[in-house]
Length: 353
Image (cartoon, rainbow, N blue to C red):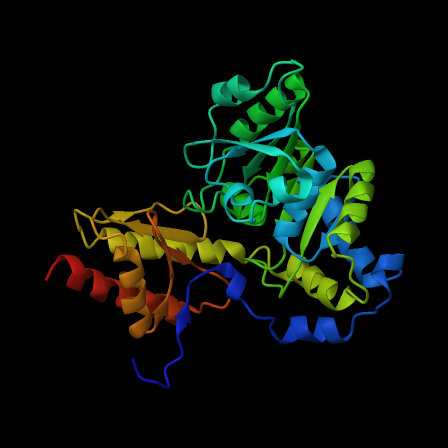
């Protein structure tokens, strides 16, 4: 690769950078002290998602990990048990925060494309027995990242919701990419949110803000969430500089998500046409493409990602899972085509030559 050539970054939709209109919104935002409740831009940001999701209230948090952690904290007490889908972000990639911060016990259940069979959820709910922890919460991820960016079907979400209501459990959706789910399914985020007690969504992924997430729920739940946000060090002062980016993202960057989905689908189709028997190419629901192949070398995905980077393309190698490719707003049509050319060439070299 020419040293002057800019790398095409498809590692994640978190790598996006604020564009000029977003920066302008940031610079012109009216500010106050949000810990005192005085930042008008943060207040506006919290009002908009509450309306979009059909919930009573919302709270702005610095990150999705903090939003998910707060959800565990508001729904559980130490010694309680939480049911996670085995691949979900909250269970795998949040530093064991549920146990470390809130003293809860995890039950992880292997799912299919992010979905835990209902009978397995039901079988994992503890009996009302003095010897046992209390099952309090079910957490699912929409979309399911490690499962391939796939969309959990709405009727499945409804079924989980009904089961949780029947058993007296809380239901939290890690909706980091729930707007991708909505764009791909045509189902409004409010319909997903109506099935759950709380939803967290990220502003800093496909929506393109530099930081921040929002947790929505009932007024009582969000009031407690604000207290836990402060406990975790998430009380920001003139946070309107970030909230302005979130507002801009919600008002301007939601409808364009379908472009990312289209590019992922086009790339998957192009790689399928290589007709490489050993290569598994995911069928994208949203903005992600996963590649995998069998092999004895545990470093095969890392080696391939390094070869791609040397040719100008950045992706993520996930041990024992494959290569993850994520499209986002900073990827132009030209860059998407170039990425396809690089992948095609190196996959041919790996498997066909």
